[in-house]
View (cartoon, rainbow, N blue to C red):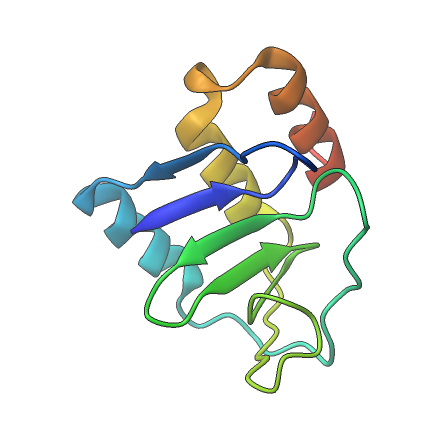
Length: 111
């Protein structure tokens, strides 16, 4: 499963592939999440969550999981409280530029 941290404008975003064990852990985190009324709006610049490149891409942003862009006809927002975002960020922490890591963590609401 390929993951992309959507944080940069004008340069490539960090991306990586989850191991089979990590992909299984992620699926477990995504199970049984309650549906949310509507997805948040994305900022034009800065942190815009994570993209999961699956058969149909998913975006995880603002504690919600939905189609790649808000307003997509196949949106199915689900509340995730930022836990999934923090989990994904921690999988790549050692390889990220420290400033990028801190910016993403702050945007997610971590400490």
